[in-house]
Length: 171
Image 1 (cartoon, rainbow, N blue to C red):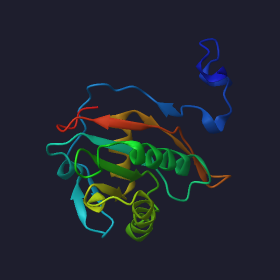
Image 2: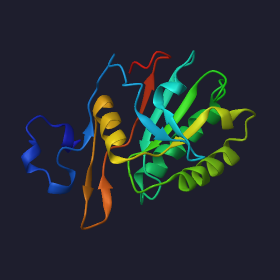
Image 3: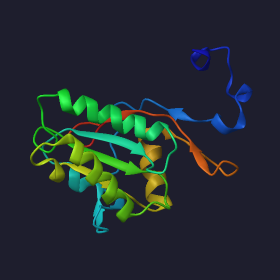
Image 4: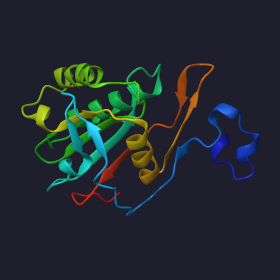
């Protein structure tokens, strides 16, 4: 579409979506010491989720008016047709990039998606994390996720997508 056209420069874009997108950072190692809170509000290191399974990472925010729920719905649809089970063959990290979102909000999102995924053991494999701006910045920079806050609309301009990481934490 228009946005992928090489002649279409960043400076011609409306302010709100300038510098928004996802850069391919293939083979980049995630900084595994970044701290987030899990759904129970406990501080964890992102490396705690990297053991022996691949990890699917999605960056969303739960009060997003549109795109984020689309990303999560798409993941849910894909997970339902996969023979592989969340928590058994792979882990899922859904991380909010809005520092105002907290663990109770993440917990209710988790409950709602697990209720609809309906598979044994998924609660131990699909994690909904929240964090402060510093942690969010480190993670989004590492994975090439560029977004910006639009104060007028009180929402974020951002891209939608998921990333797959190796058990060692490489994109």
